Image (cartoon, rainbow, N blue to C red; front, side, top):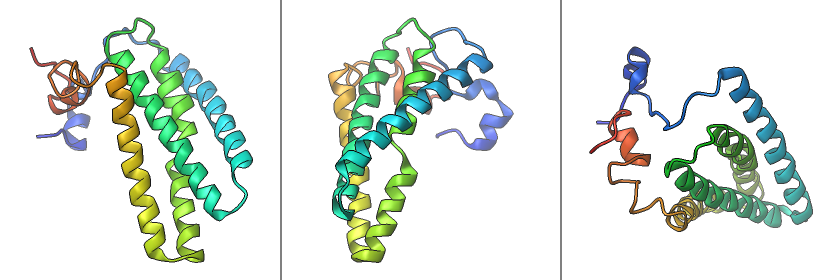
Length: 169
Protein backbone atom coordinates (compact mmCIF):
# COMPACT_ATOMS: atom_id res chain seq x y z
CA UNK A 1 0.00 0.00 0.00
CA UNK A 2 1.43 3.44 -0.90
CA UNK A 3 2.42 5.74 1.96
CA UNK A 4 -0.06 8.34 3.13
CA UNK A 5 0.83 11.91 4.00
CA UNK A 6 0.05 11.14 7.64
CA UNK A 7 2.40 8.12 7.70
CA UNK A 8 5.20 10.13 6.08
CA UNK A 9 4.77 12.91 8.65
CA UNK A 10 4.79 10.40 11.49
CA UNK A 11 7.80 8.48 10.15
CA UNK A 12 10.12 10.70 8.09
CA UNK A 13 12.33 7.67 7.44
CA UNK A 14 9.52 6.34 5.22
CA UNK A 15 10.34 8.98 2.64
CA UNK A 16 12.26 7.87 -0.47
CA UNK A 17 15.98 8.21 0.05
CA UNK A 18 18.82 8.95 -2.32
CA UNK A 19 22.08 7.04 -2.61
CA UNK A 20 24.18 10.12 -1.95
CA UNK A 21 25.00 12.18 1.12
CA UNK A 22 22.85 15.25 1.84
CA UNK A 23 24.15 18.53 0.48
CA UNK A 24 22.56 20.88 3.01
CA UNK A 25 19.25 22.68 2.79
CA UNK A 26 20.61 26.15 1.95
CA UNK A 27 22.79 24.81 -0.86
CA UNK A 28 19.96 22.64 -2.19
CA UNK A 29 17.56 25.61 -2.26
CA UNK A 30 20.17 27.74 -4.02
CA UNK A 31 20.64 25.01 -6.63
CA UNK A 32 16.87 24.75 -7.18
CA UNK A 33 16.58 28.54 -7.52
CA UNK A 34 19.48 28.79 -9.99
CA UNK A 35 18.15 25.88 -12.03
CA UNK A 36 14.65 27.32 -11.91
CA UNK A 37 15.85 30.60 -13.37
CA UNK A 38 17.57 28.79 -16.25
CA UNK A 39 14.55 26.55 -16.95
CA UNK A 40 12.06 29.44 -16.83
CA UNK A 41 14.17 31.56 -19.19
CA UNK A 42 14.57 28.65 -21.62
CA UNK A 43 10.81 28.00 -21.58
CA UNK A 44 9.99 31.68 -22.14
CA UNK A 45 12.47 31.92 -25.02
CA UNK A 46 11.05 28.83 -26.75
CA UNK A 47 7.41 29.72 -26.12
CA UNK A 48 7.65 33.30 -27.38
CA UNK A 49 9.52 32.27 -30.54
CA UNK A 50 7.10 29.44 -31.38
CA UNK A 51 3.76 31.00 -30.45
CA UNK A 52 2.06 33.05 -33.12
CA UNK A 53 -1.55 32.05 -32.40
CA UNK A 54 -3.53 30.18 -29.79
CA UNK A 55 -3.09 26.86 -31.61
CA UNK A 56 0.68 27.22 -31.97
CA UNK A 57 0.92 28.40 -28.36
CA UNK A 58 -0.82 25.22 -27.15
CA UNK A 59 1.38 23.11 -29.42
CA UNK A 60 4.53 24.84 -28.20
CA UNK A 61 3.48 24.16 -24.60
CA UNK A 62 2.97 20.51 -25.50
CA UNK A 63 6.36 20.26 -27.19
CA UNK A 64 8.22 21.97 -24.35
CA UNK A 65 6.53 19.80 -21.73
CA UNK A 66 7.25 16.61 -23.72
CA UNK A 67 10.88 17.59 -24.20
CA UNK A 68 11.19 18.28 -20.48
CA UNK A 69 9.50 14.99 -19.55
CA UNK A 70 11.87 13.10 -21.86
CA UNK A 71 14.89 14.89 -20.36
CA UNK A 72 13.61 14.17 -16.84
CA UNK A 73 13.23 10.46 -17.61
CA UNK A 74 16.73 10.32 -19.05
CA UNK A 75 18.20 12.27 -16.13
CA UNK A 76 16.48 10.22 -13.43
CA UNK A 77 17.55 6.96 -15.09
CA UNK A 78 21.13 8.22 -15.01
CA UNK A 79 20.89 9.39 -11.41
CA UNK A 80 19.31 6.11 -10.30
CA UNK A 81 22.43 4.30 -11.46
CA UNK A 82 24.22 6.09 -8.62
CA UNK A 83 25.69 9.27 -10.07
CA UNK A 84 28.04 10.58 -7.37
CA UNK A 85 27.08 14.29 -7.52
CA UNK A 86 24.13 14.93 -5.18
CA UNK A 87 23.72 18.48 -6.48
CA UNK A 88 22.57 17.33 -9.93
CA UNK A 89 19.06 16.26 -8.92
CA UNK A 90 17.98 19.52 -7.21
CA UNK A 91 19.63 21.67 -9.87
CA UNK A 92 18.58 19.82 -13.02
CA UNK A 93 15.46 17.79 -12.12
CA UNK A 94 13.75 20.15 -9.69
CA UNK A 95 15.17 23.51 -10.81
CA UNK A 96 15.81 23.48 -14.57
CA UNK A 97 13.28 20.86 -15.68
CA UNK A 98 10.72 21.74 -13.00
CA UNK A 99 10.45 25.31 -14.25
CA UNK A 100 10.91 24.36 -17.91
CA UNK A 101 7.84 22.10 -17.72
CA UNK A 102 5.05 23.91 -15.95
CA UNK A 103 1.64 22.50 -15.15
CA UNK A 104 0.21 26.00 -14.71
CA UNK A 105 0.96 26.91 -18.35
CA UNK A 106 -0.63 23.67 -19.51
CA UNK A 107 -3.79 24.36 -17.50
CA UNK A 108 -3.95 27.97 -18.70
CA UNK A 109 -3.65 26.81 -22.32
CA UNK A 110 -6.52 24.41 -21.64
CA UNK A 111 -8.58 27.26 -20.20
CA UNK A 112 -7.88 29.41 -23.25
CA UNK A 113 -8.84 26.57 -25.60
CA UNK A 114 -12.05 25.95 -23.64
CA UNK A 115 -13.08 29.59 -23.87
CA UNK A 116 -12.12 30.13 -27.52
CA UNK A 117 -12.93 26.70 -29.01
CA UNK A 118 -14.85 24.28 -26.82
CA UNK A 119 -14.48 22.44 -23.54
CA UNK A 120 -14.10 19.15 -25.44
CA UNK A 121 -11.12 20.51 -27.37
CA UNK A 122 -9.56 21.63 -24.09
CA UNK A 123 -10.15 18.25 -22.44
CA UNK A 124 -8.66 16.44 -25.46
CA UNK A 125 -5.65 18.77 -25.38
CA UNK A 126 -5.07 18.21 -21.66
CA UNK A 127 -5.47 14.42 -21.93
CA UNK A 128 -3.13 14.26 -24.92
CA UNK A 129 -0.60 16.43 -23.10
CA UNK A 130 -0.54 14.18 -20.06
CA UNK A 131 -0.30 11.03 -22.19
CA UNK A 132 2.47 12.50 -24.35
CA UNK A 133 4.40 13.58 -21.24
CA UNK A 134 4.17 10.11 -19.75
CA UNK A 135 5.30 8.46 -23.00
CA UNK A 136 8.19 10.94 -23.33
CA UNK A 137 9.26 10.31 -19.72
CA UNK A 138 9.17 6.53 -20.19
CA UNK A 139 11.10 6.82 -23.45
CA UNK A 140 13.76 8.85 -21.64
CA UNK A 141 13.83 6.23 -18.88
CA UNK A 142 14.20 3.45 -21.41
CA UNK A 143 16.97 5.17 -23.31
CA UNK A 144 18.71 6.00 -20.05
CA UNK A 145 18.59 2.39 -18.99
CA UNK A 146 16.17 2.95 -16.11
CA UNK A 147 13.38 0.72 -17.36
CA UNK A 148 14.11 -2.92 -16.84
CA UNK A 149 17.10 -2.17 -14.62
CA UNK A 150 15.77 -0.33 -11.60
CA UNK A 151 12.24 0.86 -12.09
CA UNK A 152 9.67 -1.66 -11.01
CA UNK A 153 12.25 -4.32 -10.10
CA UNK A 154 13.10 -3.42 -6.53
CA UNK A 155 16.31 -1.43 -7.09
CA UNK A 156 14.98 2.10 -7.01
CA UNK A 157 12.56 4.42 -8.75
CA UNK A 158 8.89 3.50 -8.52
CA UNK A 159 9.51 0.38 -6.46
CA UNK A 160 11.29 2.52 -3.86
CA UNK A 161 8.15 4.61 -3.48
CA UNK A 162 6.04 1.49 -3.04
CA UNK A 163 8.38 0.06 -0.42
CA UNK A 164 8.40 3.24 1.71
CA UNK A 165 12.06 3.98 1.19
CA UNK A 166 13.40 0.46 1.66
CA UNK A 167 15.02 -1.11 -1.36
CA UNK A 168 14.01 -4.68 -2.12
CA UNK A 169 16.77 -7.29 -2.31
